[in-house]
Every structure is written in structure tokens, then in C-alpha cells.
Image (tube, rainbow, N blue to C red):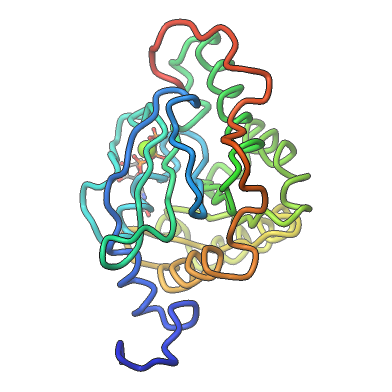
Length: 244
Ligand SMILES: Nc1nc2c(ncn2[C@@H]2O[C@H](COP(=O)(O)OP(=O)(O)OP(=O)(O)O)[C@@H](O)[C@H]2O)c(=O)[nH]1
Ligand SMILES: [Mg+2]
């Protein structure tokens, strides 16, 4: 099958999983200005702390400890990039972002992280897609809504968007269906899917979608000039403590 020249990882989940399995750590960036300028398409995994971002990345790439997942909220504290691509050739990048909304984080750090993340989502030139992970038992929180509002103009300009309902294993079938219908309305122009790392639910759909997003006609992220990470300059960046 893998030798079939017509084989398309955008449709064949086995091929998409093979591609995702090539994921390897690229770099970690405590601040935006530490992110390397990249030409390949990038997909960001965002959401509140503990939503399951790192676990989703590990599950999708079939690697146990690629991204740091933990019961302790706030585990991911920097932007971590992972390269994808066969034969060592990077054709896409996944970004695992620190979660937001973790109550124990001081207000100052929270505000700073919100600013960093908004900057990242609005200005990262090679960003082609955003996966917003939401625990359907909590629904969209105020911060999720704010993030959606912030990226809406970019979604209208072609940024791909997926509202991923995580930990679907915690819901009954009826609850899951209801959560999915609500999420479809909330995703405003984007996609919505149920996902469970535990039950391996939704993996095929998400894997093929990630491939199509990074290999489709609009996968170059549009503007390629400059790094464009922070048009207003880095500004004062205080203490390097946890971002979320
Ligand atoms: N039942 C269940 N638990 C999950 C699932 N996905 C993640 N979890 C659990 O949720 C907790 C948080 O997962 P993480 O992947 O670390 O969450 P995160 O969004 O990366 O969190 P931060 O890095 O703090 O932003 C861990 O205890 C995971 O085992 C799932 O699909 N089902
Ligand atoms: Mg994490």
C-alpha cells in the first residue's frame, strides 16, 4: 500500500499516521523571539491548561513522551516545536503551547502569557492552522472565547481551525453528540471533532486533516517574508517564570 503512487495520506489514515510518527523534537522557546523563523507550515495546539494538548500530540505521533503531559496543570511552560517529515526532511511543524487559565498562576504572568500567545497566533507567518483543545465537560471558557475572537479574522483569511473536544471517553454517547453539535456551532467556519487519547477516538480524522492542512494548496502560510513575530518589538520582557 505504501508503494502505491496514488496513495494519499490526506485520505488514508495509515499513511497519515506514518507521517505523524516521524515527529521529532525541534526546539523549545520560552519567549516568542526565541522561535526560529520557519518556511514549513506550522500547526498550533492551544487550549486551557490540562485540556490535553501534550497528550493529543503524543497520541497523534504515537510517541509516549514527545510532549510533556502531566496531571499537574501548567506542565508545558514554553512553546515546543516538533518537526514532521519522512527521511529527515521537515515538511511541517507542530507547536505545543502552554495552557492558559490555570488558577494558581499569578495575574501578571497570566496577562503576559495571553499577550505572548495572541502575538504568536496573530503574527506567526508560517502558521496555517490552530487546534483549540477543549474539555467538553467544561465547554468553552472565557479565555477560549477570547482566543477564538482574536483569531477569527485570520480564520476568515484562510487560517484553518479545529475545535477538538478532548477526553471524549469521559462522556456518554448522548453527551458527546450534544457537545459536538454545540462545538460545531462555536467553531464558526472551522471544524469540530470528538477526540480521546485514552480510547484512540478521532485519531484517523485528525491525522488526515493535519496532513491536508499542511500539504494542501494554501499550506505555505501565505506571507513568507521576514519573521514577523512581533511587529511592535519584543517590549519589556520580565522574569522568565512559567507562562501560564
Ligand atoms: N481520560 C482522558 N484523560 C486525558 C486525555 N487526554 C489527556 N488526559 C489527561 O489530562 C491530563 C492533562 O493532559 P496534558 O496533555 O498534560 O494537558 P495539557 O493541555 O498539555 O496541559 P498544560 O501543559 O498544563 O497546558 C493528564 O492527566 C492526561 O492524562 C483523554 O483523552 N482521556
Ligand atoms: Mg502540555
